[in-house]
Image 1 (cartoon, rainbow over the protein chains, first blue to last red):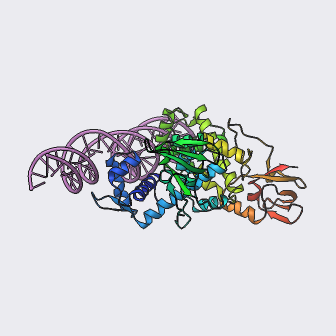
Image 2: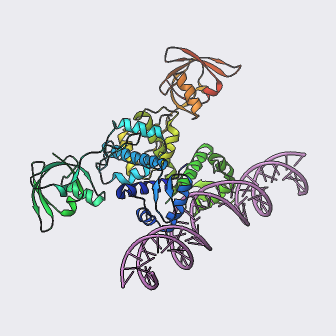
Length: 219
Length: 219
DNA sequence: TTATATTTTTAGATTAATCTAAAAATATTT
DNA sequence: AAATATTTTTAGATTAATCTAAAAATATAA
């Protein structure tokens, strides 16, 4: 039996390993989880005891096969619930995360499978993040940051690199939804902002920060 | 903030008060919750501290207005999720309880409201139990136990008085679903069993135990 | 390569939720 | 009404998850 809290640690470790492609440090986990480093050390011992992580004092941790499977399943649940909340219950993409954070802990494999079927096996969540299948396989996709598009290149918005409500609300305000068509008209070296055209309609100037957080599939 | 566990105690107290129309005793709660009486006493102190129950040593407890509102909302969530699981995810009525038991604790009023709307404001759950609205009002309905029907009386199955999987599976096996039409053909004093006709088709003999656990709306 | 800074772990407490065993209060029965 | 039985509470522990402060290990820099 894996507790709610243990699951959250596994997710945090997964997230950190994914980003850094290397073992997660105690401090990094404590930052990710908003807990003290001492609490993390305690938890790492427990997770190692349960064979969910590989842990050596002072060396950082990696997930075991078992831990990785659990973490992947949590991400699967989380993202499926996000799709449900957005598509079926009409929540907006900046509201779904917090509720999915609770729903992901519901323990029932059958529920996950049925939900997946009900949603017709979505491959990506409302933020464009891939949803692993029941075997834990993620769908990958060629995507670049808007930042990496040169003048006159075109593409489709397929995901976000930052998930904060304020960023998502900013995007909504400017109709920068998933699926939006973007053409880079001009790049300004001065502040690294870009003038773009959106959906063959209005032109728009986007800051460097925005361009660094939008994933684009070139077209 | 009310914990998961505290919520379960509130539900148990609600259930007991509903049944007995009187204050719930420590022992009754411990039985309902499968915990020791000592644990219950501890918890009662905490719930009283939070103004969720009225508690006097050795006297049993009742819910306060606040406690009652919380308990009613939990029941609302539980029953709405049961409807969702059955109607949208094709679970059977003997499977929905355990999963709803987890889902009911998800904290989001907006989620409950949206779910209610998505399900088109159902008034009863898959077992025929009433679903309170957002204000906590239950829909009542005239119903009697099949046991109370006399020979030649007719009615519709509208609910169950026992929620065990084995009973629900038994009913499935005999097509005794909600909405089934029943006519009492004959009552046997010997063992209090009844011969009935189901949906104007097959005749069936039901034991006293079954007759005591089926709610019927006379027609 | 020694001194300094940072990270990680240990030690010792705290809180929620639970337990068993014993004591106290209430209820029942003769 | 006294004796017995039952229920409830208290006392004292335990476990998971957390904390702060101090000690130990590792990393960085002069």
